[in-house]
Image (cartoon, rainbow, N blue to C red):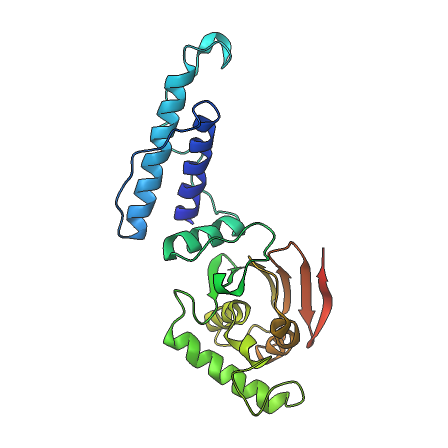
Length: 244
């Protein structure tokens, strides 16, 4: 969340300067850790604020008598919990995953990032070939897939375990729900959960996510996908299916 806030501040400050000086760039910084990324982004934001003040302090078009006050040395407000799109963008930024254009219709090679705020606990979900997906995630997904085959043999592939729609057990949406369930002993029964994803839900997820919900205790799950469409599942079915 701190990284997302720093990223938003740096971009806002940079864009404000570029409205006056289009080619301006902050000094490059080398970073090796998330803390390094945060410090570098905050330094870039402060540099942009200082440059904006320098460009506008003597220009009467900016403020009364050109008085802009001192350059900002910290974010305009205390760091707050970032909005889900900012957290998802920050995750992609720090892990090197390609960014997804607004609209969520990126190629499958871009992967998917899902986000749940679980009673104040941030939960990120990613697909099985994305940075951050662990051997523990894979083990949970394999158990889930096996349970789904036992309980829903009419919709699951029982011959080629890795094919459609079984692959949904290894997608970001299922990963986020599995990780969230671990916070509460493996089940999410009785909970209302809102998930944000940065890509369109795939056909496999359209088939399996309601059944995955049943396996995890039958929570009510609202999903806002990368196109802005709202999906709601409960009782093993879609109550609302991909409507804007």
